[in-house]
Image (tube, rainbow, N blue to C red; front, side):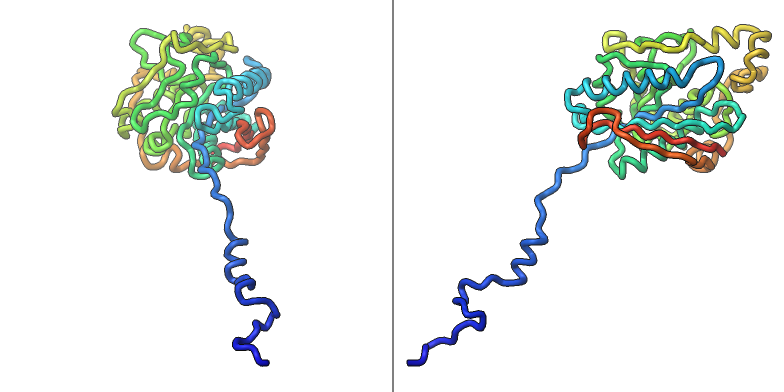
Length: 305
């Protein structure tokens, strides 16, 4: 006796057949991915020089920061909801004076590339300063957009604390938008000194310090200084010592007046905009234990413009 309804062509009841389209959609679905953590980049300018064993200082710095960043927040480099990357920007063997500012500009560009749009803080960090554990929360807390944080302030480090001198160097944390708006450091300050003063002027002129400069106090923590040389004390104390240290210092120190104003073309040319530095060698590894949240170390050798 003929059936009242046709059988499906596959030989199975129609209710048992699975839609190929539905299966394909099911296969394409993926579990939701966690949002990427904001990145804090610590940028360290570096070059070995005979007066100071910078290579030994860099080794000590990286070992200290491995413990500091991995242990400070108890999260294997994740800290308090941030991810850390340390960028060492090394000047190539070009026979010229050290150019801290241009190296930090190049290091910032590398850090922004590593962060892939998630950069929330840029910490400009000298290689010879080791932070105490109490300062970790300052590193893990990105600064406000218009309130830079001078971490190596007088309460935490006193080598360059002088009456009337608004020191802004050593270790400074900035919001990336503030650093970009200031156009970063000048690229033509060869030799030690004054590039951080120029950055301070640029930050203020571009509105990046409208909320004031924030500074930790001695109760927050201290920096251990690996370097016994103090250029203002040991090199610029007399004309004779300055002449002997001419290969180290920025010659602007020898100008009749040391009153520093904003450089010409500071906003559009001489800084991040106008940077001609080229990365000629790059390496990357984990600074801490294996794991997605472990701090990364990126070391670039830079040929300066």
